[in-house]
Image 1 (tube, one colour):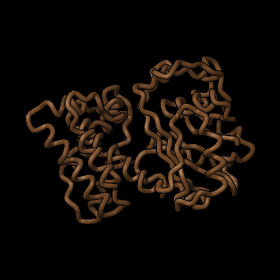
Image 2 (cartoon, one colour):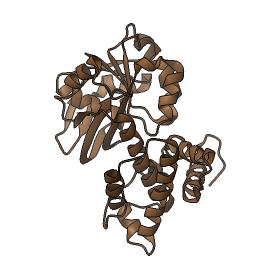
Image 3 (cartoon, helix red, strand yellow):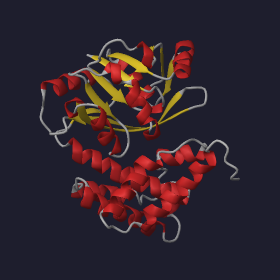
Image 4 (cartoon, one colour):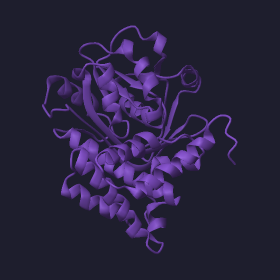
Length: 311
């Protein structure tokens, strides 16, 4: 099975390294500058499960000359529109398009460009970052790639994909309820992002403050109210686990948005918080804490904009 991973950043690079190590046929689609860096330095990963360096197969959009069996989008939400244009030549009638993007807005965007028959549900749980020199670092032992047909059926193509990725050390798992699991991941990411970015600290640091745990739970309840109204409601087991995870004493848990914010990098505020906020507003649900986090991150993003005179 020919796999095209779109993006070789912290997420796509980690995923690709582990798949290649397991013998998968992987090509990376990247921008020219990243392609040149990879061809020169290789793809480097530091991980609790072992470090690796490999010379990956790399293409830029103009070099794609045939469809792939599966296209895996690993770009950030603000890079999605450009990525959709870039993958056009890689998508044929039988191509599966899987995305590990956060939120659910990417599903609608892909459905506007490609037949819904191309779309496959997918989510990834891993904590990684990319250093300025291009090296990828896995920050914890959490790793799970979950995928499935959006209607839950065990189709021949998803079973073939499952067989292709299962040998890799990525926690691969086939799901018959992938829509619900994607919404559950959004619940956790939106809550974690709003909590840690608004308070500028980890879950444990915030919990240790007077009123910190109450604040963390209040953000979670706002997010849950929106998802229950406009999405696929999470399971009670998930909600119980989220309450524990988001109030754990001494926890270093923080969102990737918070790590990007601390490093002065662009953040996925629109896909993770802005879109959820808009859906909640449309449903008439009050979300003052989500609104505050959204404004906070919009101000941060405006300061990153070229030509900004903000301090």
